[in-house]
Length: 253
Length: 275
Image (cartoon, rainbow over all chains, first blue to last red):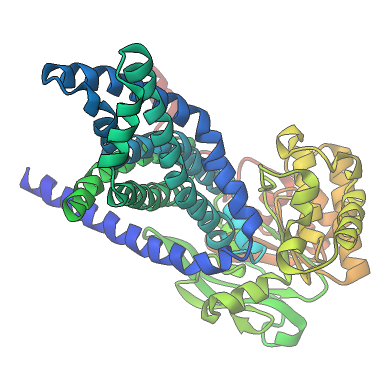
């Protein structure tokens, strides 16, 4: 039992170390990868634009649920007018970055991991190496940068659509006064709160993209190995998102 | 049983690739036990041997993907394991390799696959790249397929595109890993002629790893047969064909019985069936 625990711990430490080294290797390739903006734009499109529908749909429904629940809760204290500010703060500081990150891990992260894993399984990465093209520069770094750019943008879109959803339910359906809704929001949301959302989006972007490219690159080059890497991408990204969320919140509050 | 390796290892200038007393093990299992091979410049050298003798591993050693546990792997006189990444990439730019499965990039078209090494390493104009790519595709008979995606190609077509990609920068050394596997007789003939043509017209040094004894015999200047982690026979295809050793005869004639066991070690067949 103790041996198993120690073995598990040693495995975790080994993985964290390997991922850190991988991160350093990716970061070292970032300046060279930036010289090929076309590749990065393509990856932002892949990770970002192709995730837009799912992000917008979820943002809308999360906002609508927040409108219903928020109104119900605030109505108990007779503070329905605070719906706008409450919902905006919740979306900006927590729900927006966290849910977007979880959705990103499920949509773009898995796509990245399985794509790189399959490239490995079909010898495409080795073929690049033999053609004297560094897969880190050509494959890993552009995908990493694409994810890091895409996630904060998706987070902001999620938040905007979410606020629209809150407004749709709170103002249009439940009758919160339009002017109060927006003025309360403007009054209580500070620039610091917006930054918190942006910073979380960036940090989650780095974490989720790193996990995805790392898992894909280190996947066992078999169908089973790629499947396992894809699953691990979602699980590790989700856990990492929530841990990092707590840490950033604790620092920024 | 073992023929004398009659290549002159010492004459580095004549050999583009040399392996000297190479040992390589994976997970405690010895793949090579003192392998010595010389690949002469401008010649077609075949590497043959039963499955699992490490033929692909040999190619990985030559291309610097893995390093020998002991011994020297020299390409153009330089020890591959001592090259840094920049030097290794510079060396690889002078190589072309045809993978067993083609290893085409699946997210871009046939045209872009062939253009890939040119775009990555040169700043040639689009017009020049187009001419280069179409010329190479014409050589392998797939100019008309330039717009297709790799998923739309048959296995043989993918291999021919990969061959065009391997040749596109006119490398000094072309490495073919099982180039004939899965090809129809027409494509096989084309690939055979291409290997010969590349060698004759451009003096390209070629290493061909293959099981196809008959096909190899048509193009190879020199053949090595590997078994048990060592070279067991070497010579021209004709010399190997006339070789009297049991292993060479078994391999060259495709016999099930001989020093190389066809069956994986197992218990008594009848006893197991009846149990």
